[in-house]
Length: 461
Ligand code: SF4
Ligand code: SF4
Image (cartoon, rainbow, N blue to C red; front, side):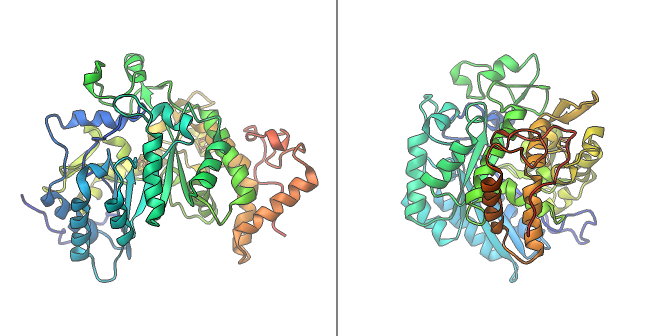
């Protein structure tokens, strides 16, 4: 198999760094989560075992490392379920990284798993090579097991907890990746407290489940994306349609979930537990956008399939967004193509008027294009389905993030905000008006009305 060399001239449009998600076992998984539309992507590679070959592995890692102009590179494994590849595959990956890494490059390995196949061997390997392991869990048993089920429709909670225990025993760094869906959307505080108190999680990431459908596909989509042997007709999920499945999170509910988590976090856990959205929101106050979803533009988060096919984004693994194959064209060239640059710029260039005029645009930036299938207040199409929730979250938390940003500017730790919030609680009581300007009582506030003014209230003294 051929292996293209780095282009002689560095493409002008190539990003200096990017975050590629590699799927060594394609979309294949050992469980059958009802909301997981990635399972349907197997239909893109029919009669294919979906396993990355050593030749593709080597081509991928060489191109990834030589395509970065930044001192740090992330090698991120995802699926499907990457543990289906067995440990030996990743041992070889680590060897190849050492072989191709430039002397001054620091490489971070990350690995997203459902935790079911973890054992001592896996965890020893992760520990030895400083992997950061993402463990998928949707909360306590009854919430987790609603959608995260195996192929015989049995809940997977106990097996995930076995995996979590092993990660803890081997002192592996892990974060929790939790989807927010129709089952857990009303339990933000409970879910967050479970991760913090029961699992000892220090890093938590929340991902909204938004499964799109058309009037024609909705009924089939509501049955899930499972394998055809279940008797359902298989659909290939694509980002089309302006309806959502019954498992999808509601827009307002998503905002309430995030606000509930925030209100718990900001009193007890700033500086101790890192919630991805909260971290990136604080960074955005300094003009740094660390998460593509809330950055002005995107296009630097491609997805690599097991056979070397490179797609624009993990959420757009579909034929129209195939950039090419890294065995034929170097990934740096593919990332610099007008097609991919346009994909990234469209995030900014297709904002609705409502987004352009929005008071929290600098924090939200219209969210992810995959969720833009709703209608804005002025009736414009292409607006973010999650807008009501995103707006409520950013408006409600704005005053407190402003204080944290002020603390940082004063050279103080943002965790000092906890004392300010608690003092405010004592002074005003939970039934005083919320400082976010909603007019709601503080304890019951779930975000301001769109017309109210953000970023007023408590201040760093
Ligand atoms: S489409 Fe969404 S997930 Fe993909 S890179 Fe853009 S913002 Fe990120
Ligand atoms: S909160 Fe809504 S209107 Fe504001 S930028 Fe985000 S999606 Fe657009």
